[in-house]
Amino acid sequence: EPEVTQTPSHQVTQMGQEVILRCVPISNHLYFYWYRQILGQKVEFLVSFYNNEISEKSEIFDDQFSVERPDGSNFTLKIRSTKLEDSAMYFCASSERQGFGYTFGSGTRLTVV
Amino acid sequence: AQSVTQPDIHITVSEGASLELRCNYSYGATPYLFWYVQSPGQGLQLLLKYFSGDTLVQGIKGFEAEFKRSQSSFNLRKPSVHWSDAAEYFCAVGRTGANNLFFGTGTRLTVIP
Image (cartoon, rainbow over all chains, first blue to last red; front, side):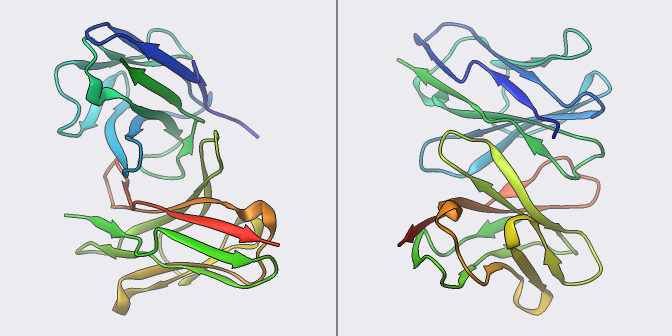
């Protein structure tokens, strides 16, 4: 069964550092997403990406966040200057159609110290 | 605005017993409804989804859910729970033309022998 692959599974970074979280969506999917889950809280939408541009973003997705599809397979989330409150599990997802049948990756646990 | 409530933070059932996990949503129109399961260290796996039509939806692993518009509910059921069903279960709601899903806070299921 096709999978969404995320790397690394766990990343520890110092406050103020830049991090890039990587995802390989399912190859025939056209819509890509990032969600995050702070420990003990809800899974929250960050951003969706389609046709090489952001199609929707939440209020969480401020100027310190950016997404990119640098080649035909990877989809990345960059946090420019990490804060302690950015510590969370970050999930990448992809779908064939808008809002339908997401496939989620296994997540990257980001710990900011 | 959409929201999802999962009233039960933690449920414990005996193996072989029946299970019902509750989910209530708030949305003005007909929502798209999903149940996801997350095992420790794993991603979010789609159990089942409702878009339209038959209000009783069958999913993977023997799960089913029933959409009740009058009660704004989409409860997840399984007639006989297996030890491998122990996990965190998330209900989510989406809407037509939108990219993002709104998640509940999750219900942790413990299965005892």
